[in-house]
Amino acid sequence: MEEKERSFNLNDDSNVTIPLRNLIAIIFATAVAVMGYFNLTARIAMLERDQAVDASDIQLNSEFRIRWPRGELGALPDDAEQNIRLDFIERRMEQIDVQIEKLKEAENN
Image 1 (spheres, rainbow, N blue to C red):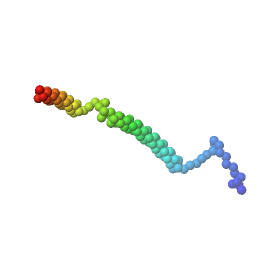
Image 2 (cartoon, rainbow, N blue to C red):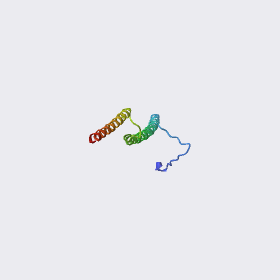
Image 3 (cartoon, rainbow, N blue to C red):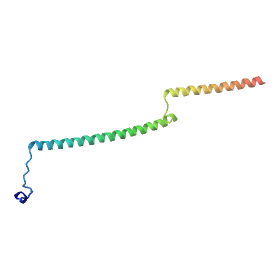
Image 4 (spheres, rainbow, N blue to C red):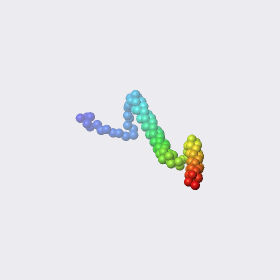
């Protein structure tokens, strides 16, 4: 009954004893948890930044994919040369058509 009669008093003068190895283990576990937390938050921040950069790149790529075939973003030098050659051929064909019409008129007269 003596044990039941004892009261548990806890105040600012109370002493707590803990083995030194347990204290070191608690400090080490706390340090590992803190490092893990900061590494995790840094990794999440890096992934969020990478996702924002990728989203921007995807948006620019989509815009390029749509606007490039329309010719809104310019043309390659080879395309420009090809367009010049096609324009020359079209003008030459028009001249040939005019000459053919003149020959047909001369033949009919």
